[in-house]
Image (cartoon, rainbow, N blue to C red; front, side, top):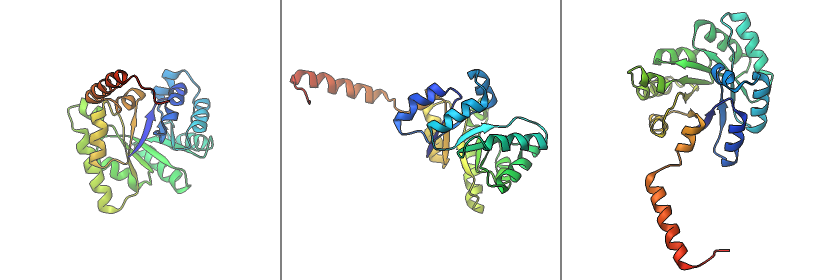
Length: 217
């Protein structure tokens, strides 16, 4: 499963690049606002740091302006993925951009039929928000499983990008459900390394090693 980082903080991305585990980045208007950065400048820096897909979101509500924004964002770098909302206008723009060869990430997906429409519109990625569904009393993983089955039934190539992941268990369950990718806040990514038994085992090994009085180098 591909791992994307969900952030607009370039410094956070710089810290994670050396892991060799980051396949891409997703951003949204809220993250850009929180960063205090201009979107174009931030996306340029991200695209230089990671060769994989960098999702940059267009925000207009009418077709012509949303399409113009999408085309503008796509020109920033070859690895930009234009992020669009799952609305009638958003899917119409998705179809236009995908026909032009521009990759599109359709966001704010909360149902399997929405995901079906996005795939038929040519979306490269569909972003179901698993955490927000859980918050609302639904089962986010059931949505991932439903989308996986529909896409496999009809041979859709749209990749399932599990979004709004809150915990390492969300990542595990998304992988088991067949998500192609997951986008994670840096804190959730760092939590993937953690297990209490790993910490205890390492602590025991180090204590025993000290008793040997040895040095490897």
